[in-house]
Length: 283
Ligand SMILES: [Zn+2]
Image: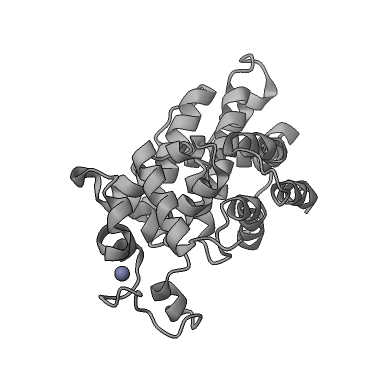
């Protein structure tokens, strides 16, 4: 796939000592993504091609957050506020159809919207599939065509979030994430280690004994405090080893969602202190 080397180039950039901020990373990703979107309105990728595209886009993002390869790819895109491939395609189809519908009434592309005649002209042959798809996408997202790019983006994001929330993957992230369709606030942090540690915890993919034991990477699932298994919730909410740093959080904010989704000096300091004690990312 022609775009793959461009995403690989971004991966190489991330692996240098001075990784860019999440905002810069998203800007770097925007160029190859817009190239992909240019073709997506007319190209109908099959299931395997969609799968490949998902991997190509998710790979540098996953690497940036220091997440293991087991991280759910659509959740990785969701964490960055990006659409999955199907929604990206819906957006492109709706945008193209809106542009075509705004052409002058005598433009031949308007023939594409005739529904009860057999395609007879070259224009109809070319455009009819786009019209049918655009109608299906409009029904799916509840939008009326033609629509502005802002309205299309908003409707597609709502549908994308709804599809994601209905899926049975990404449970750990769904448990704590409160907003969708935009990057999370902790991406504003200037500390890349903090971003990686928080991401690992948000995906519940930090190297803690409970998950390591499930993958046969630790002999025991138990925490060194000896009380219970070393899970994300135990470490952040209950484990006595972290009682002192936990005092930085007021009582009301000692919930998994508050600790991992609220970006504040207190939650950041707590997460970094837990990381100092337990080391939650691999270098
Ligand atoms: Zn413990």
